[in-house]
Every structure is written in C-alpha cells, then in structure tokens.
Image 1: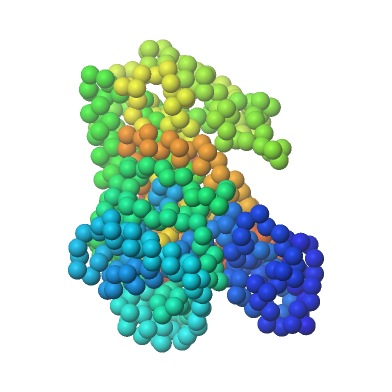
Image 2: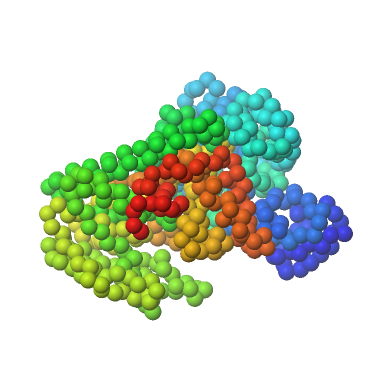
Amino acid sequence: MIRIFCKNTGTYKEFQEGVSLLEMIPEFNVRSKFPIVSAKVNEVSQGLKYRAYNSRDVEYLDVTEQSGMRVYCRSLFFLMCKAAHDTFPGCRLYIEHPISNGYYCNLRKKDESPLLDSDIASLKAAMKDIVEKDLPFHRREAQLEDALNLFKEQGYIDKVRLLESSGEVYTDYYLLGDTVDYYYGRLVPSAGYLKVWDIQRCHEGLLLRIPDRHNPVKLAPYVEQPKTFDIFAENLKWNIITGLNNVGDLNRACLNGNGTGLIQVAEALQEKKIVKIAEEIERRYYSPEKVRVILITGPSSSGKTTVCKRLSVQLMACGLKPLSISTDDYFVNREDTKKLPNGQYDFDNFDTVDHDYLQQDVLKLLNGEEVSVPEYNFVTGRREFNGKRLKLREGNVLLVEGIHALNPKLTELIPESKKFRIFISTLTSITLDNHNCIPTQDNRLLRRIVRDYNKGAFSARETIRQWQSVLDAEEKWIYPYQENADVMFNSAYLVEFAVLKNHAEPILRSVPKNCPEYSEAHRLLKFIHYFVPVSDKEIPPTSLLREFVGGSSFKY
C-alpha cells in the first residue's frame, strides 16, 4: 500500500500501488467549482492518468490554474490537429502564436486551395464529433530512434528535428484514435473533457478560442488586435526567410556553427526597427503638429529600459535631443499607495502614479517652462527633489517611460498631435514544432529570473512566486492599451532561449523541490532543455539581452 496526501482536502488515504490520479478523485471527495483537468504530483505537473507507485503529495487543478490551462490548451491543439487530418487528408496545420485571447492557426490543404467558410464548418463539426465520442488520449513511450522513424513516416520533419537534438534515450508521444502527435506536456484523459472552445476565421487562417481562465465555462472574450497580429506576421516572414521556423531548425543551425551569425542578424533586425522608429519621430517632429512627447510602455521584462536608451541614441543621430522621465518617479508616497485585498501594496495600480502631477509637469514643459522633476526613493517610499530640472528647447523631445504610459488618462490634457506612442512587446514567433507554440510570457519570465538573480534582488523561487501577480496586473493595466500604440516594437530575440539557457539552468535548479514554485521551475527546465545552448560572448554590450544577462554598456 502507498500513502497519498491530497492538498485540496488536507487528508491522507492509502491506496494500492499503481492507482491513477483519476481513480483517487472520488476517494478524496475533491470538490472543485470547475472540472479537474490535471494535477501536481510532488509539485510536478502530471496528467490524470498518471499512476502512483510510491507515496506522493497530490494537488488537483482546474483550468483557472495556469498549469491546468496549459494542459487544456495542448489537448485542444491535438483535437484540432486530428480533426484537420481526418477532414483534409494530407493537410498541414500550424499552431503559430497566441492572439486575441486564443491561438492563431494556419491550415494548408494538400491542394493549396483557399480556406473556405465551409471548410471551417467541416473542421468544427469533426472536432465536435471527436468530443462527443469522448475519444481517449493515449501516451506512449518509445526509444528515441523508434519515435523519430514514426514521425518521419508521418512527414513530421519539424518533430524529428526537435527530438533528434534532445540527447534523450527515450521519448513519449500521444495517440488520439489512429492519429499520432508529440506534445511537450501532459494532456487531459479524453476528448470529452474539452467542452469549451470554438474556431473562427482570423485573417488568412483560424483562431482557436479557449476558455476564460477566470470563468472557464465561458470562452475568453475575443479582442481585435490587428497591430499585434502584424508584429507576429512580420517576424514569421523573417523566420521563413532565414529558414528557422521552429526550434529544430534553430538547433540544427547552431550545431552547424551558425550561432554567431544568428546573433548578428537578430541584432541588426532590432537596430533596424529602432532606427525606423527614430526616423518616424524625426519626421513627426518636423511636421506641422510637431510631436514632442514620446510615450513608451510594455510589460515586465520586455526590455523597455534598453529600448529607451537605444532609441535615445538613434534620435540623437537624427539631430534630436531626447530628455526622459519615468512614471515611477511620480509614484505617490508609500502611505498613500493603494493596497490589494491581501494587504500588500498595489504598485501596479494606475492611482499609484500621481498622474495629475505628472501631466501638469509635461504641460509646463510643452509651454516652454522649466520644471523640477522628482526622483522616487524606493527605500523610503517618498518622492524627493534632488536638483533634476528639465526644459524643452528647440530640438528636444520628451521620452515618458512607464507601465501606464499608454493609458489615455495619463496624458488626457495633452494634445493628441503632440504624442507618439510606442508599445514594447515580447512576441516569440518561433515554435517548438508545428503543433507546440511557445507561450510569450515564458520569454519574459526567464529574462526576469536571470536578471533578478544576477542583481541579487530575488531568488528564482521569489520571482516565480510573484509572477502570477505581475501577469494579472499587466492584464488589467497594460494590455488593454497596447493597440493604442503608433508603433509596436518586438523585443523577442531569435536565439534568446539558446543564450538564456546557460544562465537560467543553474538558477532554476536552485529552487527546492518541496515548494510550490518548483512546479514552474521544473517546467521551465524541461522547456529550455529543447534548445542547443549558444554562448553570450558574441552578444554586443548595447544588446537588449545585456539588460538581463549582464555586461551592458548602458547605465541602469
């Protein structure tokens, strides 16, 4: 007999060896508002078909948990892939990237004919039929060579290239009916679990809609994001040009000694974009409207600070003289800061910034007045005036950087013609393979873990613990305004994960196995294991990546 502790109920029970997580649920009488889709076993994500042969701690999860949502979405991907191959034999389905609270997918039929509305209806009907039949997902384990041969027979070269550089002896794959596929995480037990989803036309492809994480009995609300889509499309175009559509392609290039060249291309593409933004600001500065205020924002670890510094350099190359202020310096004093329900300070709240004061300073600067700019002391929690004074003269533009910079209320009294808005995103366009896209937030989380550790600010455990709160704040205060931007800058770096791997692995391994944060550390370690490492010695000191791995020539 083995002893299982259920964290949901706080109780122990004994079971026969080999009992599945699914079989334990009624024994523990686990109550959940929403259907359980997966579990954590000793803080490692597992599917409900997992069988325990030793005593374990178990925590059951529904879709409101990020880990549960990932399991649900992976299962949806396989459902869609099977339905596509059954409906359109010989087709290729590409699950490319998250957008509009769903996932953008590209379905290419064997005859290359356009995707019709009737095709979408047929695909949807096939998916519903599989769900109604409640076909089970089966996990199989095989020697790597056997799995590679299986995927070669299916024409899945993307999966072959991904797995052949893994260095593993065995790997697993999944079956849904007679359809075989590979996913880098667990799936739900059967298709009948997948009750909430939809597909609709989106640009030239499809949008796979998923449940709302906060209320998973409903679909996440559709949000039109044309500018974000254009950024993904632009990056995808470059992936196609360079022949690097997925991680398998990237690994092959790095193993062939092309890592340095890829770094140089990535740097050139980012600098080209920054130059283009600087030249557009220059054009608008000399236009009749005379743009003077550059508003810059982006989510955590998107590289805002480095982009601002590199943009300042390019603006000077255009003959302009940038001045800068941060919305952080206009924080209200600590005792006036709003608090969260748990009693902690809500530093991401819009009212944490004294926006009236900030806006009045900007208006004074636009009127040619000199202002004394505060500097926020994060130790004392108070604004201080240390002699920093600004005045906009001929040739000056003002850079305003902060998480609320694109919120219309921050600059509602400033004429629209005087403002230029920049949103810095981190939109990973490369995929693990055609059916495994990379969550865009993983890019930023790894950056933040490495930077926090290198600066001695937080351990990996502490950074991971805070991360969900960071994401919730971004969802509320940043993303609703991203489409307001005049231009979007994608700070994702073509070979970033390969470079971050060397830095992140030892940091992630320091997370104790007996804490809740280990689950995320374990997942990230498994994820970056897919990448062939690339040394950062060829990363230039002005690179955006240097903000996170160290060695930047900019002062922060």
